[in-house]
Amino acid sequence: MDNFNPYRCQESATGHQAALVVDSPHSGAFLPPDMHWQGDLRLLLANEDVGVDTLFADVPLLGGALLTAHVSRHYIDLNRGLDDLDPNLVAGVRPAATGYETGGLIRPLPGLRRARLTQAELEKRIEGVWRPYHMRLSHLLRQRREQHGAVWHLNAHSMPADTRTQAGKLVDVVLGDRHGTTAAPEFAAVVSELCRKEGLSVAHNDPYAGVECVKRHGRPQQGQHSLQFEIGRQLFYNEETFRFLPQMESFRITLNRILRGVISYTASATRSRTLFAAE
Image (cartoon, rainbow, N blue to C red; front, side, top):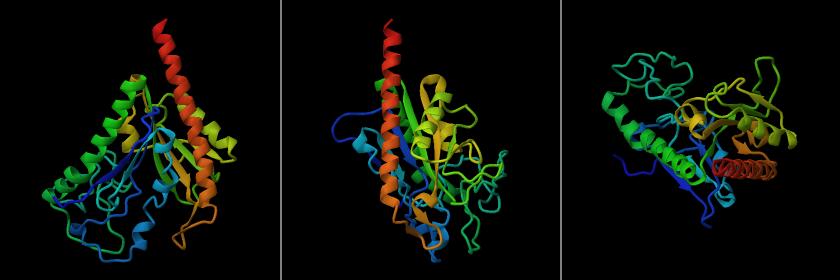
């Protein structure tokens, strides 16, 4: 296996650990040598969550844990299931029952025709990148759930600037809990209200309901709540020039206020669980 880290994990240096974990599976930009990419990098940037790791950079300072991908999603998509495979891209597989129109575990490279990956090449990517990332995320969630009795997880992404709901409404934020299956409804309601107080428009499960990261790690019946958090790029990034907008820093400060509100909620919720258990 090539010697590179598939992710970066940051936690509080003060010892204080809030019951919040944030992960960003699509902010990685590293292209491993065996990907053999020699095209225009801007073709890849259009499908990556550029800047999401920067937006959430203060999570460890607030007491949460931050897990960010190091490797590009064009090598292997950490937010797709292992069975979400396109037979046109990987040899010897059948299309997943869920379909691969979402992009799939292995994405086609824009503007480039390539031979299908072999099973050995696929396994190399899974074992070297996908599995270590999800194992680390699972460890972080389990550790904080055991410490606090419950844990709350934000799976952070960016979405195109013109994202609309099915009704045609432009939105700034889309929260996805796979229609109430990956988190208690209260979690989405709290995050939604915090965003609206900052003047952001919010949609719930429309048009994004959440994919593999929340599906795999969200277990609300066990006190492990996972919510996909999509942020419109119009708030911080120019998709035509591939540059951050001047308001990037002010929006990051806004997001920090939202995160402080989330952490305050988790602290209150864990205290309530402790009092209830003691009665």
